[in-house]
Length: 480
Image 1 (cartoon, helix red, strand yellow):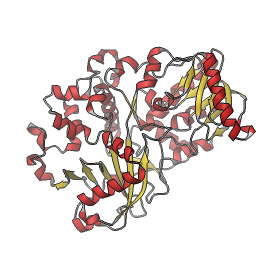
Image 2 (image 1 turned 90 degrees about the horizontal axis):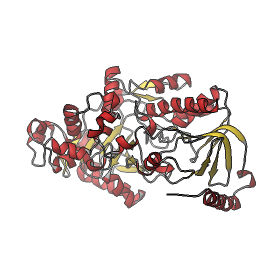
Image 3 (image 1 turned 120 degrees about the vertical axis):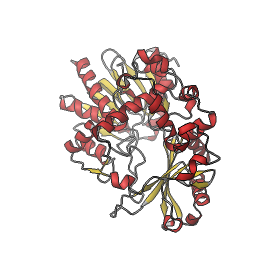
Image 4 (image 1 turned 60 degrees about the vertical axis):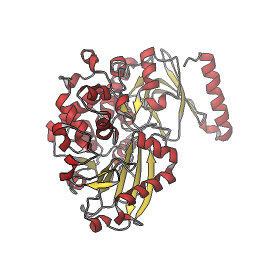
């Protein structure tokens, strides 16, 4: 994509003129500021607060009508399940400190999260007893791995054979030879396509299939898991009332404007400042802009001038995991009738099913969350929310006849079709770590970047706040 400054300004002007015709005149505002922050998720809010503490004047622009970004607590579903970031592990030092600083209590939810025991295994539409899996006709694994359940197979194999020895430098050029697809690596270990499809693709965590995710991506995930295991493997936390309470508390601390409903459509930047254009017709000017938008959405924003080639290519092509959740309220305790765990690992469209135990009684199942990932999520998205909900309920009723007539869909949440997310967490495709890992976060004139996708040392919520620290320092250095 190339765009001249003249075409950029004409296109931006057309957007603003169209929007202004339908919006109040006060929608178009121009005010000199030190910094504009795009996005009111953890990284954007963390950056804004750090800059305000340094004495800078900051305005935050948020496209949604809520704060939190990919932290999203479903307050309208019993047990307020998390549609976004689910938990806080022991190495989430910045996140834990932020909760303390902004007065949000962190609870240890290990018993609620795992108190029901291991999930049931459902293959080809039928339950498989744990002691029967090793000899099951559908088991595609080999050797001693035949006894490993599908949901643990890839993780166990990769831990055993991970060729990256210094996980803390997974992104280093010295590891470029391992910037290959997970499929190719597992194949080199003797795994069959059937094993990879069931043990990796069926309920994928990164990528869409094993073909489109880099082995170095999983090295970064393993590095983060090791840090959390070493800190306290048994701890798993969540903020009281839902994880979205943290960004809400952070937003209340802002001194400057937080403008919701401001979807950014264009960014123009130069050596002495920048302007941001929104689809409501408003224009915002500052000495610097910090963008926390996921690259999956930033790629639809006009940037003038374009970032350097490698960074621009990263914006255009970095992957984001498609995940669609179906949140279901059980009208009866069907698991007591069939004697099986309400939580499930399936190879069908229901994906992984988690029993949510966040009511007044920690043993009570308030709702079920079905996570469909990768190709399953894309399939459900093609159906649309209502049909997707019906399809997943039908699947669960087929797997668990005792549940027939007892399942009510409370919400279907697709992250891939969310225009402000276009997926959940970012991931590197094969050969992208070598090409992009050290390019994503580089400042572009007066445009700076934050967000979990720009962090190298951590993942998830912690990565968001790690990136906020870096971006805030970069802006202060640039502005002097």
